[in-house]
Image (tube, rainbow, N blue to C red; front, side, top):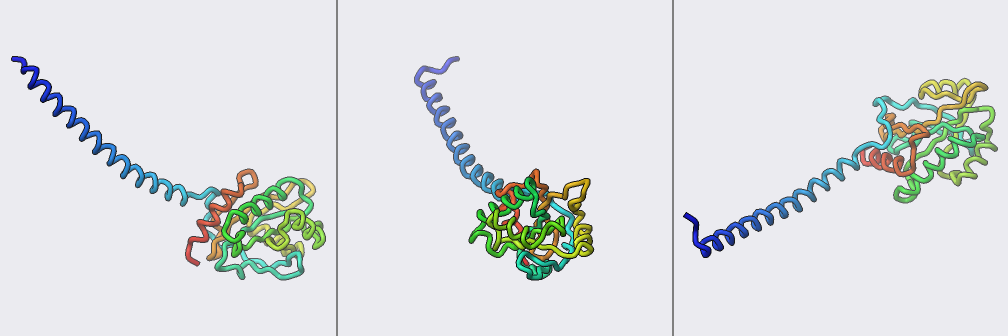
Length: 213
């Protein structure tokens, strides 16, 4: 038996109100829950490394001489994040690119990256003279922001070996790589030249800076 038109209209009205109530609940849940999920996803993304995670090994210590004739000892940088790279003062491709990306990363950090120590290690002790190192740093506006270090070849060979770096040879170019060393002195993150960007480098430096010394 069919309900009267009046009853049908009443039932339809109740149905419409139920649908509206369910829709309102879903919207509220989606807005509140969605924002929380989005925030969590944002935090999770912020904690993901841009570079390559390295085995948690102590960075090999060294003492070398910078462009001003001052001794630079890696272990003295404990408590600071260290950007460690491998450069040739006469290089025209990877080295200038890496140093420019490092400079860009420092510029993205608070106070121009003050408190982040940057060390460029020579891969050609004979050509990386004090004069050439100074010229290279001046060209890239890194004179007071990077220590470009060098030393006797026998010492440099030990340093290269400790970090698995290929120096300049008559038959091969050098390794083009940037390491990030934690405040505790551990190798944490690596960027090959083909992967590094200022933004990615700054992002990973921030992650290491948040870790307790």
